Length: 217
Image 1: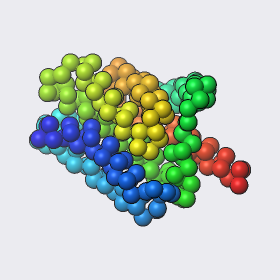
Image 2 (image 1 turned 180 degrees about the horizontal axis):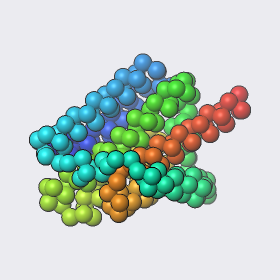
Image 3 (image 1 turned 90 degrees about the horizontal axis):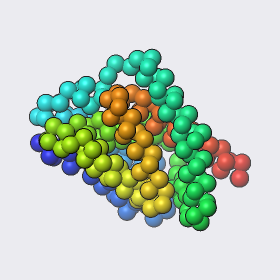
Image 4 (image 1 turned 135 degrees about the vertical axis):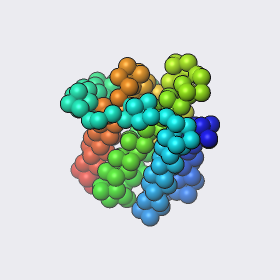
């Protein structure tokens, strides 16, 4: 069951992303998007059941600790880093290289209401940290992998899971961003700051993109 949980955690989001792209061919429909979010939540619930029951992992092993003021503070530090340092550098680098950025992926979301985008960010950011950082690392370590292999394998899969929606070049930038989250998790073993910063960073990016789109119209 541990291997099943690991496979679901690593490949499940990628499969859902491929399924969503395969049905699109144009703007995302709200009903299909909501169905995708429901499947994502069900996937996370199944993986957590495998983690806690058959695999016998503890909440602490997954980095699920009570929310402390330190978690909030570190979450704010990570958010500031991604918002004011990492994000601008990534955008500039993509422009200098002459490759497409995140615009194509954002364009697929234009027909969706803002409330859904907020929901998708809350689900997606939380799920990715639970699956790729908290659970996958803990499960690989329990199965005998060294800490760096346990960290690198989920990071690689996390990177390519972003290709269907965003394209190759933007997805590759998530390797560096995900690497920051991974290193921070290995240091603190606390998933709270990761979730806070991941969700908040994506919310800011989507809000800014929506505002720019409205101004353009």
